[in-house]
Image (cartoon, rainbow, N blue to C red):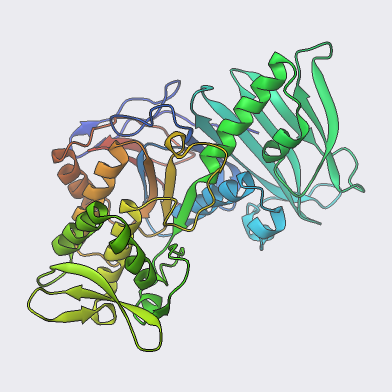
Amino acid sequence: MAGSSASSVSSVSGVVSVPAQGRRVDGAAGGCSGRPHLTELRLSAFARHRRVALPLGAFTVLAGPSGCGKTTALRAYEALARLGGGAEVGEVFPDPVACVPERARPDVQQRRGFRIGCTADGPEGPVRLDVAVQAEPELRIVGERLSADGVVLLETALRDPSRRCVQAAWHTAGQSPVTRAPLPDDRLGTALLPLRVAGKTEGQRRVLAAAEQMVVALRSVFACDPRPDRMRGPVPVGSGRLLRGCDNLADVLWRTRAECARRHAQLVGAVRAGCAGAVDDVAAEVLEDGTVRGVLDRGDGVRTELGRLGDGELRYLALSLVLLTGPGVLEVDPVGEVPAAMQTLSVVVDGLDRGLDPVQRGELVGLAARMCERGHIRVVGAVSDLAGVVAGAGAGAGAGAGTVPGSVGVSGAAGAAGVGGVTVVHLEP
């Protein structure tokens, strides 16, 4: 089920990469201090991708022309995250046929599907997860494999298509080498293991530890794509947790400004660097009807409503806020039983540089590189202007971000290279 890749060497802005096969790709200096995090995304057979393995650093950008599959790769990442959180497969893939490779032909039983996977590093070392999903004639998870150090810890397979379950076998290393039992075919077995494995033997405890590492790495994911058209008007006062489209930006500003003066000051500094005109503060005002609107305080008695800002300014403001906050502010569902200090927030952004001018792009990339260097946040984003990202990475490196060389060929892709704390993955149509 694992994808395959071929080595390549590429160079970006004078930094020459080296083959990444057989070594960890940890991103910026400082790593993740043992926190579970994804180091690879595999698209064995998913939409336009076949046998693709994408290395994931602390700050990863997917670059390439339109149609190369950047958005598709991010969709697979988010799908794995939702499955790891216990979501039902029908919720995760509302249009599963669109995920099937275009030239995939059905077997004799008219079945077609797709395969995705990932690797999570952490205290247990690299742990691999590969999932096979049947899209036709009915949606179901038909195969799953969780492995570490060459040992298969969990494996499932569809034995009887007439039953809504798969046969699962997990590592025991007791009187019996494996334990076999049915699991539902509509959810990820790895996420269900804590409910089924007792942890009485060393082998069972190893299974549970590997499954926990994978689930923790997948759960704390915030996929966002700020929508300026939804951010301009006043919004009701709500939970104060930022939605993926950042529709309720004003409500979140109302909350964060009061809760953390230090982070808010950092946000004001970022907005001052990327938005036109003077910026003394970023605030929110409660209106007579009980709604709240965001404003930029110009410092001379003038307050500019967010509705007057350009699309690029709004996306820049929203993404800066995302990078400077965390799970308590963003609409994510982290693992409650694991301390926050042992979790890493992963931000997934489609169109990271969309609508941004060169100054905004450079400031945002530099901010992301600095935040990722600290180890509590990781970023995966698709970009259309690689040169702008490289320039921004240089600014980030000047503020302390590390350089991470690394290269991998992915089924026709040019490769990946680290520049100024950024792992750049090149995709080609």
